[in-house]
Image (cartoon, rainbow, N blue to C red; front, side, top):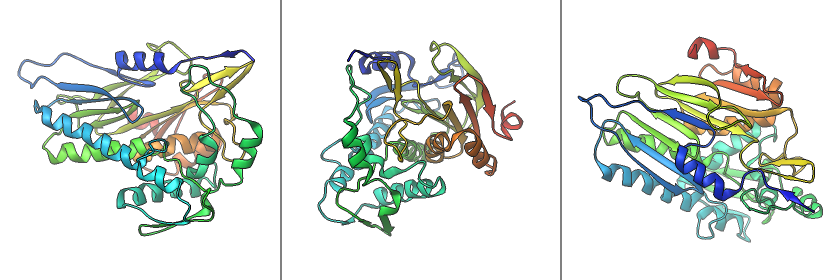
Length: 338
């Protein structure tokens, strides 16, 4: 069967290295002569391109420590790194496991969003998600029988968390934190920067953007990528201060087999990608963790229910793009970002 790969992993890394973003653009302006020249660094971490820029500090030790936080949390949350805490939990033969405070905190958040979506978003998707590889240059479909078998072990209700004690129903029950980890890490990096006296910075974890304060007294100009368009084509440009902006879309990690299109946002009930007439969901929030979780949760809920949930929240805004390219804004979006 001939496989047409829409975007290879290597090409994505090259593009990301050049653009410093995944699905979101950041527009830079020159630094006034009376301002500190910004310092920035870009590295491959968390299985993506990470970029951090400081606008009111020239201390590169702060940058290095910020990247060290990426390494610290990857060693806790990674599903694929065999030395990580989560990997050991997932592959433990025990059904009771004592986890670190950090892992307990993120699992608690993941279970919360799994619950409010009634399993449309589900961090227990790991038995199925590990069957898919959207980074391969020659991806193949997972065996349908293996998908069907793995679905038996998917279900957030199979996990119970009390303080730092995690219990799972079966040893085969596993957790995937890929939809929430980058948001958690971005928030931790922001906390660290603020503790170091940095009040103006941009944190970009593979397209999860977190603006710390503003940029030289003015908002950051963030352009939201138009799905399936060239990288310089944006849906809209937003003026952002001290906010997170996160997009979940079907146009980055994807491939085509025959005439069938497959993307990485999997339906926990079927084991295959969602087919719900959405191309992307962008969430604006104070906390990047909320934005990260909600971008996937609202995508999984679909346009009607996703918008309904966002509209019930006073501090969350969203942009939904359907498969026809039509943009749908949350109730208060234009009031906040017009």
